[in-house]
Length: 138
Image 1 (cartoon, rainbow, N blue to C red):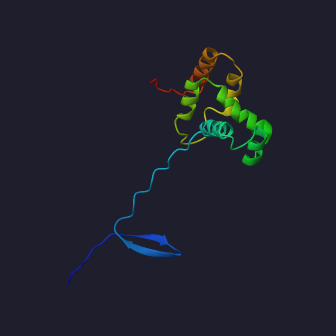
Image 2 (spheres, rainbow, N blue to C red):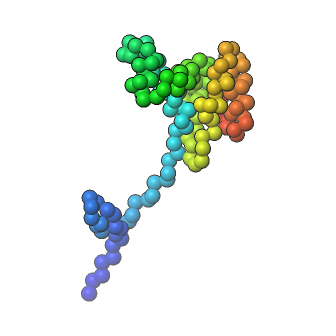
Image 3 (tube, rainbow, N blue to C red):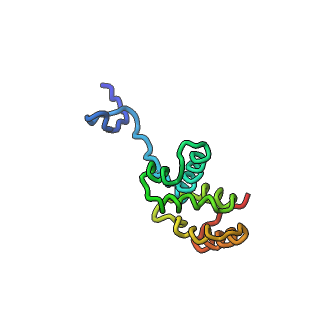
């Protein structure tokens, strides 16, 4: 008598549960998510390009197409008033693995209102330090 031993695992394919030869695949680690402010920064850059290329006439039309209010569109577009290096840091903030975002758009609104980039940089560093975020300098 011969005994054959094989590893199998069960998986749902289509609408049926089936036995599949081989060991079960390793469960993928839950990846983090991109911080919301990074997505908003990317949107602001994209929206600016649409305005520059004449695809949309103005921010009002852009707000209507994006299904947001005009004041919210202004808040998003105001992110473009940040110093370029701050914009880059926002785009490359570390992923959020669990819990809330450490830096939010609301946190940055006061920084956006500052006209001098040196002051913006100082306040942004304080914000990162306050939220225990360390971004390696290039």
